[in-house]
Image (cartoon, rainbow, N blue to C red; front, side, top):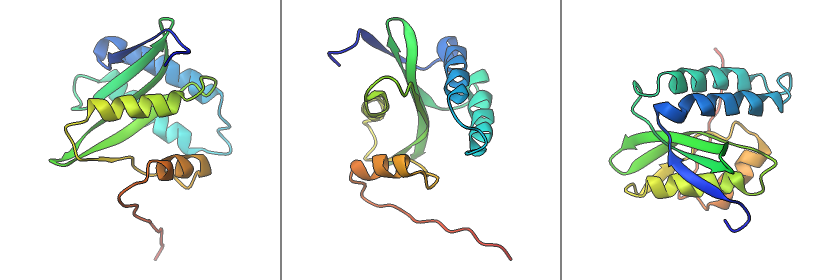
Length: 145
């Protein structure tokens, strides 16, 4: 917080397309062949951000020196629980993921719990989820008939 000249903004239709542009740059840093699910996730992000006013989500945007470097959005799951759907940050900004997560949690502080959704079996995401000492983690399995 002392390292950067930053501002936090509420995600809205006015900055949603800027977040979409940020996401396109974020994807360009990833190995799509190694993780093809990124493209499906991008389609979902694009749908929400291009139609932000239609969806009942809340979000937060981190700008450093006037440029988006992270954002997160989610929604109310039930009276006690909010859910984080998407969290993206510039991997070159130290602790940007932790900061945007903390900022989104503060925004949703009316809720007792925050569901951080799946970690997709990605070790870094699994580590991050466990570092917040969750009340409960649900293990999922896939099967075929």
